[in-house]
Length: 372
Image (cartoon, rainbow, N blue to C red; front, side, top):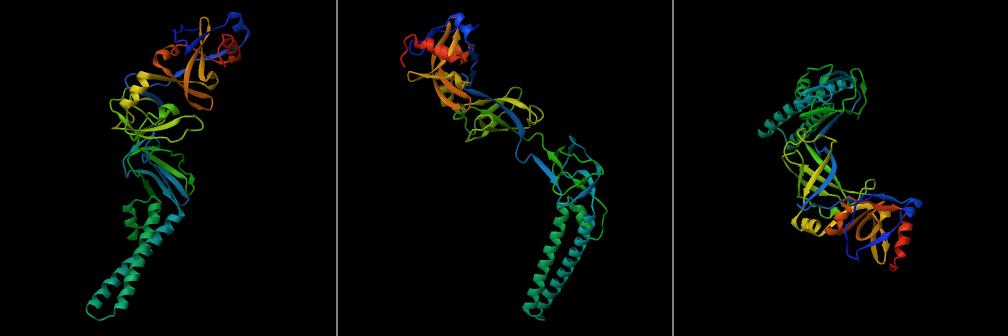
């Protein structure tokens, strides 16, 4: 029914004899502790997810409603920066081109006036105030020209096509290029759809620019520091811890650890949203204290009993249960992190601890003469 337990010192472990009849009469529930301790070689294993690194994904959205007339590159297709992805049309597009032509013409005329007045002023034929007014008009015309170009740029029009439009070559539609090299994602609209302003038209993701989002319990979070080496099985290159959360996530009751991956690990070792198991190389001081001196486990909070000034676990064995003294180092929601000497921790590797029906066990224990 349960694994055999080693013999502990009298002050840290006490046998509680409970007959089979008593066990059958009371519903005692048990659970296996979860090891949290860094191993003897100075590593800590954490689970988490591979996510896109900041800046790895660029979304394309437009400030005006448009009609999608052609899809040139679909989802999951690898594209180069500047490669055409979709073709669009819009009544607003025609007006924006006219605004650009007007602004470009006015800018060119203002520059000619400025060159003329600069020459006249140099020859002493006009006053300084007239040159100042001409310079101010040229500045305003340049600003209007740049604004017209930026409006078209926000619509996804390539720079080469904007230059052609400024020269008077108007178009009925335009193509939107990929803003960076990567993989097309999020292209949900189909040909003939009206795409509303502000909606993401498509995104481009660099699948190789990944980082790890790992989770650790609050007790072990103190051992994790920026700069520590991170490895994964099957990945020849290592990563590095770049950040450790300062708070506990409400849902998981864990501390988040961010790790950047070196080299092109994306697609060769991991992919976006893949669940991973990563090994952190702890500092020597942390690994020696964690690995050689003590071990830590996660257990249900209901498994930890406070008695006689100490915290105890009731570990199941052949005779009933053994009260094992532990140190509780963290308690969050329904989980507790306990610590005990490595020699004693070996017995928890394949054992079960009581989580429900503890009143019977505690009553039998107190009948042994344990002080309150």
